[in-house]
Length: 192
Image 1 (cartoon, rainbow, N blue to C red):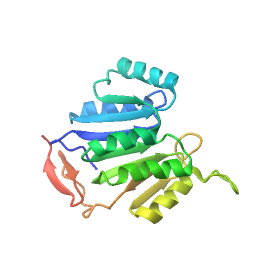
Image 2: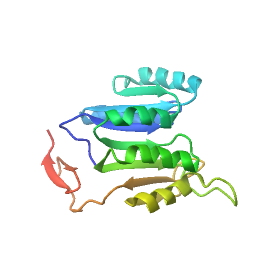
Image 3: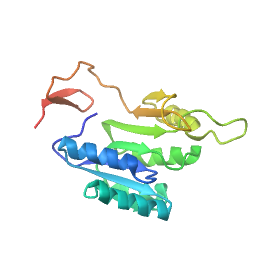
Image 4: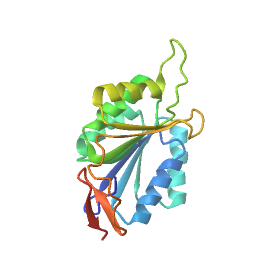
């Protein structure tokens, strides 16, 4: 997955918290020279205000579009306006049904080579407890298929991160230096 040099790349994050991940993503976009917008949504108004302050301090406010509110309501409103999503990072409410609903709202707009990232994927539920992100990943794979890589021993508590992609690259040939891979056919084009 690479950022497309010929259009605005859309990146979505749920669960802004104080903005650390959005700042890192936005700075990577700025450093890449690609055109992109990072939409991020936070439920808590005090945390949202702190994140907005940090976006200004980090110098990434021109790239980040912070939103205050429930992530599913935000996605219901914004996703129909988006042609394609390059990257989604679902890290808001970690309950099973909420994670699955966020995924349902974005999956049809994901680029063929786009990725969805999940945080806190380790199985921590016991017995009748909500299966949380771990269970949501099982539901997503059974309903939508795709490719999933789960990295269970990284991240903070709750550990684990996962990467989902609709389809694998058709050609795993390493890209030529100075080029990027675009689309599911893994075509190689020179960087602009």
